[in-house]
Image 1: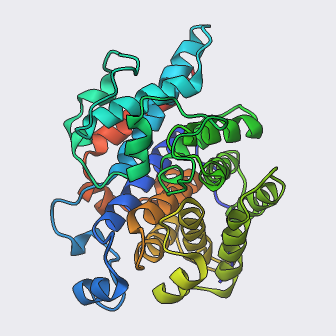
Image 2 (image 1 turned 180 degrees about the horizontal axis):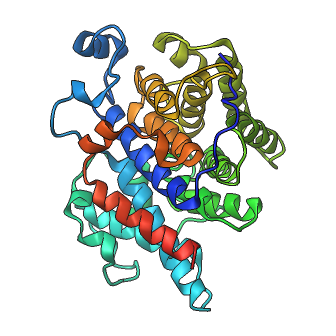
Length: 360
C-alpha cells in the first residue's frame, strides 16, 4: 500500500489541535483496554482481527496516563505562552516541570518538599485526571526526586521508556516557531523525567513530525524529513534511526501481522519503538492515489493496527492518533468513537486553551 495519501484539504490550526489531542486520546483509550495483553489473549477476547472499535468494549472506556500527561504538557506550554503574550519572559521548561509536578500530585504521590509550591490551574480541577492509570515508573520516579532534570544533569539517566514520546505531540502544535525550537522544547522536557539520549531524541523527533504535518507536509514527506533529521543528530542513539528506518521500510511492504510487527519494530515499551510503531501504523494504512479510503477510514485502520499487538498498545495507539489528528484535523475522528470517549470536554477545554494562546 502506498505511504502517501495524496492531497487533502488543509484543515485550520484549531481543527489540527483538537484533532491531535482527541485523536491521541482515542488511540490511547482503545489501546489501554488491551495494554499488557498478549495478542493471543486479544484475539481470544475480540476475535481474529482483535480490538477494532469502541463498540466491542461496552460503556466505560478510559484513557490512560498518556492522555493525562499530554494534557499537562499542554498546560505547561499554555502557561509559558500566556506569560509571553503579556510580554514577560518565562522559562518554558520550568513551566512544564511545574505542570508535571501537579500531575504527580494527581497520582497520589507526594510532591517533594524542595519542589516549588504553586497555585492550581484549570486543569487541576478535573477529577478524571486524578485517576491513576498505570503511570510510567520513570515519569513518577523522575518527578519524585524534586530535581528539575536537564540534558546535562539528567534524572533516571538510563531510562528511555516511552513516557517521553507519548506526551510530546503538543510541542509540534505551536505555530510560527522554528523547527529547532520545537525539537529543543520537546527534548528538554523529556529530560525532566528520562535521561537516556533515545528518550529525548525520540520525543523531539516525534514533536517535529507533528510540527511538519501542521505546517502542511504530507505524511510521507514529513516522515522522510524527520528521518533525515534523526540521521543528522549529533551523538544520535543508534537505535532511533534503526527503528524509524524499519518503520518506513515495513510500511512500504504493507500491513504486517501483529507478531511480525513486534519482531520488526518492538513492542513500544521504549521511546524509539513506540514512535516507530505509531508511525508505521499510519504509513502502512495510508490510502494510495486511487484509493477511496476516507480520512476516517484511515484513522480507524491505523489505530487498529497500532493497538493490536503484544506490546504497549495505549502508547502506540496514542502516537498514531496524534499523527493523524494533526494531519487531517477533526475530520478523521469517528463520531461514535468520540461519543464513547471519556471526558471529551476536558480534552477540548485544553485544546481551546492552546488555540487561544497560539492565535492571540
